[in-house]
Image (cartoon, rainbow over all chains, first blue to last red; front, side, top):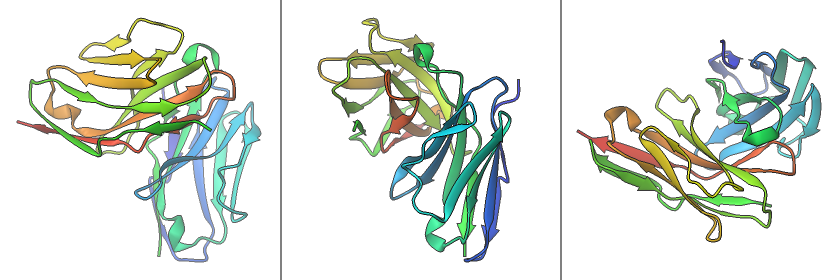
Amino acid sequence: DAGVIQSPRHEVTEMGQEVTLRCKPISGHDYLFWYRQTMMRGLELLIYFNNNVPIDDSGMPEDRFSAKMPNASFSTLKIQPSEPRDSAVYFCASSLGTGKGQPQHFGDGTRLSIL
Amino acid sequence: AQTVTQSQPEMSVQEAETVTLSCTYDTSESDYYLFWYKQPPSRQMILVIRQEAYKQQNATENRFSVNFQKAAKSFSLKISDSQLGDAAMYFCAYRSGNAGNMLTFGGGTRLMVKP
């Protein structure tokens, strides 16, 4: 079975540009998570969805960040306008329900560099 | 809020030897789940092992086992017969049994394996 698929794998863009990161969760999974990983702050949860509905977006750093999940098989994380401090690896993860400690399955991440 | 602490930024082990990575967490909950994830240089996040807090028996997965001490809020990972492919960052993570499905990660431990 295909795992969580993220695109692009690498993104380099200039400050001020709009950046869109994409994620396709594992089929049948009803939870989707966006994380950001940096050397300084480690792995941080940005936002998560349950059945396509945003549940907790308290980790979204500021209004420049937005996330959507229009259907069960697709989510986007958008940064507009982007800034150099947004440079990080962004992970998407999905999981099936909350019962019995279902683990989160991670995509390969998108390495974002803002110049 | 829960916190997860990995006190060893780096560890090294000789190939074929055993190494233990430490993790402590702070919570007031009684129902929760704990995970260890491995992140090799390829930056994938790979689930290594998980433990349900209500289970007294320590989880094992082949060469990987945990020492779960609920009263001490400790969750260490033991890797037996270390292999070169075990070299990676290892992250301990906590998930509440009550509040959503999000993970709180520790800062990670970089494991080096010497041939």
